[in-house]
Image (cartoon, rainbow, N blue to C red; front, side, top):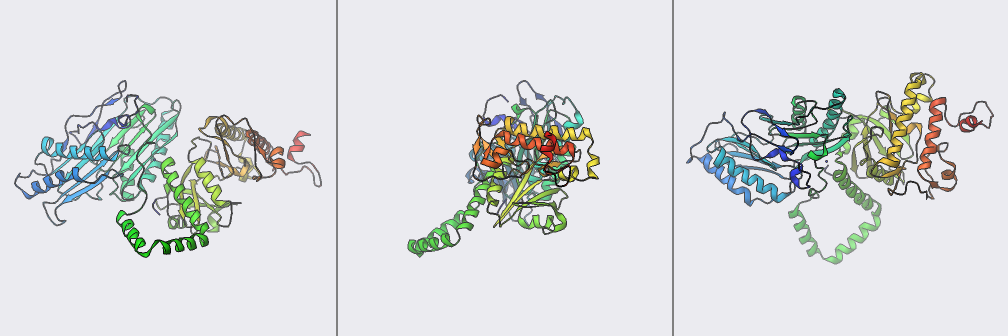
Length: 565
């Protein structure tokens, strides 16, 4: 299984940065008119001076002409990436070329842009040059007499920073921008051989509420080279600007804190589903020869005996498309996760719940992750998996745990979250020694953070959500002891105008002791259900005792009744 300005809506809002006017030097900063939102570039393309010219009658000239003239006749593809060559690998007159477009450009416009860029570059701007490079409004095109397929190239560099410096805490601004870019870098680098692209958002640094980011590599690069290229760009780009766009031949990125300069590509053409047209034709032909009767019998037998497997495969396919389209999540294969968790060893296990266990994992490039492996024996495992992905992937708040990726393979259902060394709140407040770390200021910060997270779920998010399982073990703590609400498997979605209403369920799920009485007894739930659980959690944080704690042996009093007394 294979693994995201004028104020008008068209595609030019997203990338005004590729005006069809390339640049002269190996690294330039471009002036920006913030009022008109036009990103102006120098007026000349780059003709590679280190590569000598060729005669019009040479074989290289014929090969280059053949390559350029063939572009309009190419079949457009939804990946917006084209690699072309004319001449044998051993031929010194061989020409190699790469064309790629921005993610939001449709396939027809992309191919037209590359074709026009190639003609202009070879006939108007850099005639008789054995290598040249140009960026246009929607695309990039480069060619060379040297091998360029799968080769990392970070020069020349084009940088377009917003002229406005960030206000507020500059260090925090840069840190949060870097976190978003590094997350997107990992996602893009792990893409396939046809597209390496990722985009997304993260909470910003005041006064900027949200950061918008997009990164892209030419997909002929290896995962390591894509990582290296973007890392080079991140480290060398101008820091502390409200927005910046950075380009080199092998990769590019953009990060903005002003939505006017960034269009989330919600309307781009989706990637095609895995498959091969020729194989489909062959299969269809064979099936027609075999006969519909035999096929019908086989399908009936297969579906009746493997209904559960077919259902899981269907759900997995739909879910994979959902996650890639809506959330730009990292997809890892099962072997990678098994290696990262030391084959799900007990030493790596962080905890275990009704739907499965959570493990610490370390990816091969050093990033630590939390791996939630849903139990294959749990009848609710798939439902919880779908619930968590469909909800958490769309939520963005500093007090909610962030979903990084997933794995679907056979019956395996695995979620990948950001990892927190401090684990969960219950490891502190219920431990007599570790509880001493939590002074009153820290406890207040934890309570306030959980409250902000719940308020976001109930009132401020795009989706109004009731968590239904608020408890100490579902509150994770980062390095600064800031709380992150986790585990949305029990969560329920409300319409935006229904959060004040109640619902009923015949399947009461959650943790006794945290449940509101009306929910535990009759299945009635609303936002008040979470508020009750939050109140119990606050008492546990203040008292440092579990809700089933009793002040005396054989006493009928527990924490809630003890406090009310």
